[in-house]
Every structure is written in structure tokens, then in C-alpha cells.
Length: 288
Image (cartoon, helix red, strand yellow):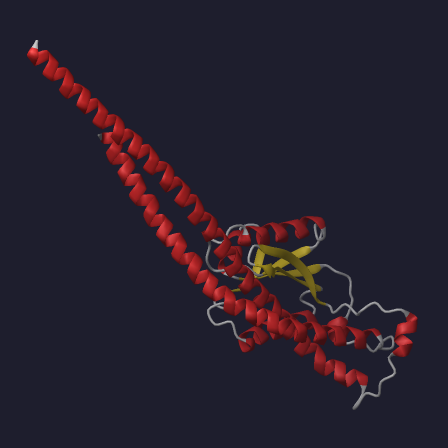
């Protein structure tokens, strides 16, 4: 009977866990729908803005590049890992941490690396091995453009001042609910689009007031939008990863509960059979 009591306790515990994971799956599914709509609607605008900026930058004459496109010797690198504030999202945060460590070892092993962490999970782990200059764990509480623009302005100002020679974003790009792709994108300096000489000649536009002023106006806006898109991508990826993880957890809990119920029924049947045999044996002994 002690075994039966233990099995009943485990069945109750697994059933409770299954209810929690199922509820978390539904919550993440609802949040994912909104986040997916937001990033899907935003991508065409952000991508076109970046394409336009890179195309214009490629046509500038030598010496006319923006301060945000200054290509200097890389000694100090700022990596901006974008994670989440909560766990239970599968490998979502682990992949970001691994991505930061990988590019640090492979691309910037001899450089002075600093971090600006966005999200609590990456900050908790990476601050043990890297220098974290700044972190913002509240950005996902209300993911709006204005606070993201302030972060982008801060990073741009420090790049212009020469505190960092290169800035890299590391985040999960949303593909679908089950697939997130770790991206390591150069944020600063801006990389001009590579165009053929014939293509440059076909860009025969009239710019008003002039090309340089337009680019100077577009660059800050494009960089802010770039960071905002990365955060939106990460936000949608987080809910997709959590929904998938909770779906798998619910399936595993269901399978375990069914297995425990089968074991419980077998044990109960064996216990009843033993009791019947004892009664029959006792009755026979009394008759004899």
C-alpha cells in the first residue's frame, strides 16, 4: 500500500505540473500572436530603410562618410546580447550566451570586449566572465520605440566618442514558433552596401537638400530602428520558444502521468489479488 500511496502522490504532482505548463503554453501563444504581427509588420519598413541607407552610403565620395560609418582599428568591442528576463523557454537564452562566447573567442579573442546586456538571463551569466558596462532588464516590460531609441542614442554617442570601435548585436531572429536563429549583426560602424560600378552609375537621382544631409538624417533613425527590430525579433522568438518548450513539457507530463496511472492500476490490481488470495487461503485453513 505504501507503493500505491507514492504512485498516487506522483500522479497528483505530475497532473499539477501539466496544468501549469499547459496554461503557460496558452499564455505564450496569445503573446506570440501579437509579437509576431508586430515584427512581421515592421520588417519591410526597417529592411527598406537599411537598404536605402546602405545604398546611399555606397555612392558617397571618399572622405564624405558619416561619423557612424568610421572604420577604425578595432581594439574595443561592445557586444549587445539580447535575452529575456524569464526562463522556461528552452534553449532561447542559452543560445545567446553561447553565441556571445563563440564570437568573442573566434572573432575578438585579442580585443577588449565589453557588454551592454538587454535582458536579465544573459546578464546573470555573462557578467561572471565579461565586463558588463551597462544593462537594462526592464526594456521588455513595455517594449516601445522611445526607450529603445534612448538606448540606441547612448550606444551611438559612445561609439562617436571613441569608447568602442565596433558594436555587435547578438539576438534570436524569429522564423517561426519552433525556430529561432541566433544573429550576430554589426551595429556600428555602418557597413555600406557593396555595389558594382555599373550599378552605381544607374543611381541617377536628384537629392534635395543634398545626399550627405539626407544620410546624416537617416543614419540615427535607421540605427534606432535596427535596434528596435532586433528587440522585437527577440521578443517574438522568446514567446515562440516558450510556447514550444511548454508544449513539449505538457506532452512529456501527459506521457509520464499515463505511465504512472498504468503502474498504479497494475499495483492496485496486484494488491487486490494478493488480498483475495490471503482471504481464500485463510478460509481454507479455517475449514481444515
